[in-house]
Length: 438
Image (tube, one colour):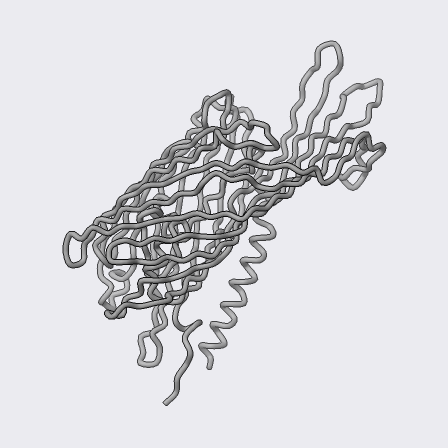
C-alpha cells in the first residue's frame, strides 16, 4: 500500500511539473532567430534519441515511445508512460562581441503513451499504438534597435514576438517478418503574437509611439509515416533500415491586425491613444514543407546499437499568406550509438545503458542569404529501476541526455551556444497492469 501511495504522489508531481513547464517554457528564451517562420524548431524527440545525436529513423526501443518513426510502435513490449523535460542554458553574442545575452529555460519536451496490441505465437508483440503531445516550435524574442533616419530623426524600434506550435498525435505500427510500417495522424495547432513599436527620439519635440501588432492562430490535421526493415546478420544481430516522411500541406490561419499610437504608462505597459487601423479574423494559409529522413543501424539486441541518418526538409516551399520568409531547405546528418554491458545481472553499473552521438547540418533560418550552420555533441545514460521481488515485474527507466552545440559560425549577426539537459521518465507495468490475488 505504501508503494502505491508513493507512486500516486510521483504521478501527481510529474503531471504538475509538465503543466508548469508547458505554461512557462516559452517565456524566457530571447533568440532573434525565432522571429522567422513559425519560430525556433523545437527538437521534441524522446530522450533516448536525444542522447544518440537525435538519431530516430532506424531506432527501436521496447519500452520508450519513438514517435518520430511510428513503425517503431510495433516493437513495444509493455504499456509505457513516457514523459520528457528539458533544461536549456543558452548564450548569445553579436558579431563584434560587444553584446551578449544568457538565458536559462525549462521546457516540456513530450508526453507519450505506448500500447502493445497484438503478440505472435512466440509472445513477441508485432502491432502497437501510441498517442501523446509534443511541442514543435517556440517563439520568444524582444529586440531593441536604435538608428538615425536621414533628414528625419533618431528612432528606437522594439521587436517583440511570442508563441509556438504543438502537435497532438495518435499512431499505429505493424510488423510482418522483417518489415514494420506505421503512421501518425494528429492535430498541429499554435499561435503567434508579433509587435513592432517605433519611437522618435527628440529632445525638443515629443512624439507618440506607433505600435504595429498582429495575432496569428492556426491549426491543421496532419499525417506522417515511417518504415523499418531488418536484415538478419545472426541470431541477435540485424542491420536495420529506417525511413520517415511527410508531405507538404497548407495550414488554415487567422490573423488579427492592429495599427495604433500608444503612450507608455508607469506600470511598464502602454495605453492606446488612437487606433489607426484594425482588421480581425483575416483568413489565409501557411504552406508547410515536405521532408524525409533515411537511416541505417547495426543492432545487437540488448547489447549495442550504432547508426546514422540523413534528414532533408524543403523549407524553401514555406509560405506565410503567400509571402516568402528567410528560410531555406535544411540538411542534417546524425550519428549515434548505445551500449548496455549486461541486462541479466544484478550489478547495477552493468545494467546502465550508455549513449553518445552528434549531429551537424543547417538550421532553416537564412541570414544574408546563407543558412545558419548548427552542430552538437550528445551524451546520455539510461538508469533502470526495478523491484526485485516475486510480486512485481515493474520496470522503470530514467533516461538522461546532455547536449552541447552551436548555431552560427561567427560571420552571422548573432552566434548562439547552448547546453541542454534532458530527463525522461519511462514507466511500465505497475501503473497499468491489473492486480490479481490468489
